[in-house]
Each structure stands twice: as C-alpha cells, then as structure tokens.
Image (cartoon, rainbow, N blue to C red; front, side, top):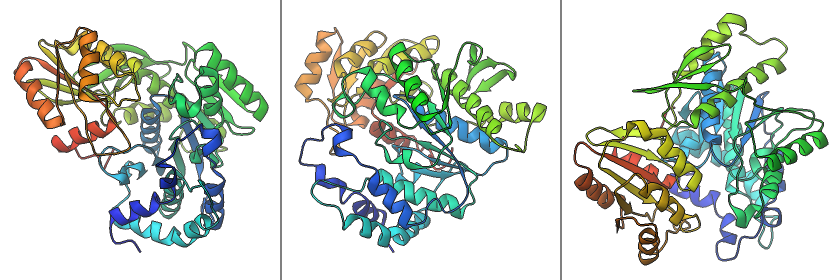
Length: 451
C-alpha cells in the first residue's frame, strides 16, 4: 500500500526515468506497448465486460472524449474516462461519470497492481521501460471494473500505434484533427504522423474522423482497409453549424437535434461536438439492443450537451477585466483561440503567453500580438522536463514580430502586469501550456475534480 501520492508517482515513473538523460528518438524505436500488454494479462484486465472507444488526434481529442463521455452519461450508461495530461490533480486522468478517482482508490489500486508491475519491470533491460501511461491504463481498467463501467472513453497520449492506450479491445476509434506535431518523436511528415495515429483503428471495427488533409485521409483509409475496418469522414451533413455566441457558450444546429447549447466557448468545439455526437450514434448502432432510441435518444443528447464541462480550453475565468485561458501553444491553436473570442474582446488587450521552447513560440507571439497591445511572456518550473525559451531569446523573438513585450518568471507576476495594463474594462488572454493552465485553476480556485 502506498502512503502518499508522491511515493506512488515516483513508483509509476521509475523505469521511465531511464530515458531522462538520453535522446528520446522516434516512438517506433523507443516505445513498445508489449510491457503494458503483459501487465494487463498478469492482472487479468480488462476484468469485466466493457465497450471501449479510443480517440487520437493532434488537438481536440480530450474535448471529444469529455463531450462523448457526458453524452453517454446522459443516455444512462456508467462511463469511464482516461485522459491526459491533467491540470491540477493526477487523479483527473481517471474518471467515472465525470468524477476523478479518489486518492484512497488511486493508492489502493496501484498497491494491488504492484506485484504484477514488479514482475513486468524485473524482466526489462537496458533502456526498456514500462510506460507510466500503461500503468495508468491498468489502474483505470481496474477502477472501471470495480465501478461496473459499461463504456470507457480513452484518450491516446501521443501518436497511437505505439501508445499504450491502443492495446484495449476497442471496436470504435475516433480521429480529431491531425497535423504536424511532436516531429522529433513521430516523424517530420504529415503522412508519418498520420501513420502513427492510424494505429488505433481496430480490426473489423469502425473508425470516425473529422475532415482531414488529403494526405492524412489517404493514410487512414489505407490502414482501415488493411484492418478490414469501416471508416467514415464527417461531411457537411454530419457537422454541426455554429449559430450564435451566448454568455455561457455557443448555439449550434445539427440534424436531427435542431438547435442546441454547447457550453464551451472555443469555436473549434463545434467540430469536436459533432464528432462526439456522431460517435455516440455509431456506438448505439453497434449494440444489439440499445437502451434508448428515437425521440428519447434525441432529447437526452440535447440535454447531455448542455452539461458538458472541460477546463482550460477557451475558459472564462473572470470579469472586469474579462480573463480567458486556453492551452494555445501552437500557431493553429493560438489562431483558434483568437477566432473564438474576437466578438468578446474589449480593448486594451493584454496577452500572457507561456509556450515551451520546443514549440514555435515566436509564431504564437506573432498571433497573440495581433490582438494584444501588450505581450507578457511567462513560464513555470512545475515540470522540469518542460523547458521554456531563455528570457533573452523570448524577448528577441517578440520584438522581431513587433510586440511590446515584457518577461516575468511567474504567472502571478504576469497577471499583475496584465491587470495593470488592461484595467477593469480591457481583456486578458492567457495562451499558455497546460501546466500554466493548471496554475490558473489553482489561482481561481476552480474545482477540476468533476466534469
């Protein structure tokens, strides 16, 4: 039995640390889910009948997972969810009906799995390791069995083909937008990244995807053919249409549901909600006798959508000045952040930006400087493996795009500067890494334990 979360996390990451002092290399050379398969076999997991949905993509996969999980809850299912990363608590990664796993269950289940984990790791050598993702998966599957979960929605951590989440016996896989990302780990072409993502397509199963670039679509179709799976890309008739912004989100229209409230501010969430809803429909079609159908199904989808919560994605934190936060650390995500809020901005706008140095931080600075008359660059040391650009490099990049920039070493100092600039009538935008998003949740006392 583990007595503290700290000791538990140290144990979970102990073999993964073998890679800390060496170049990572491509996933196909450094990641092997065989150890996770062995762990699940030794622990007899999954331990109970359950329908699995696996979701990958370059952005939006967590949102799709949270929306789909809430819709399934509304239909009366007991729903498990596994996602990453977390914002405040490691427990957030494992949820049942939206509630994160309690500390006592987190520690107890890890303790129960310890003999199996030790047996797997004692056979590993060299730079082999048992992925923390695999351990979290095993913990989740055990917790889901205890809670009699009927459907589990699982978000891939990175890629798909070599990600531990993909070892579950799923019949349905989902693809959020795919783009260039993690090129040092997945490869430097869109086709190669799509090949990694395509690895979640189940044999003789069903795959659903948002519209993708032609190169990505070709790779996914080829993989589906190899697996004997059916794949469908959402077309115009499948996608919801944005109708209007509201104080609490957006109005969207999607046949046959009509006009619905989506309580998320990001304009990109319209596409994510479309994929989640169509995925629930596909899951229902796979079941011999779904418990809800017809008008009742439509009614529950409509009401379930209004209950969706997903923190840190174009989330409004405060008023006077209006403050919004988003994990926008790529150029496309920063552009989507701005597009989602354009009608809600009031001048003067101060933009707080915290982008790790392995991202296109100068590109994000440029996007945010278009709306923010003041650019405040910040960082955090919460995760020593995530490094931010040195102060001089960050300021030089900001000045190169014409930004009036400042640099602070902490989020609290950045917020002080932003408040001083925006006053009560302006707007503060935070385009920051998810670690900094987590800090904002703590500052504003946002309870992330339930979604």
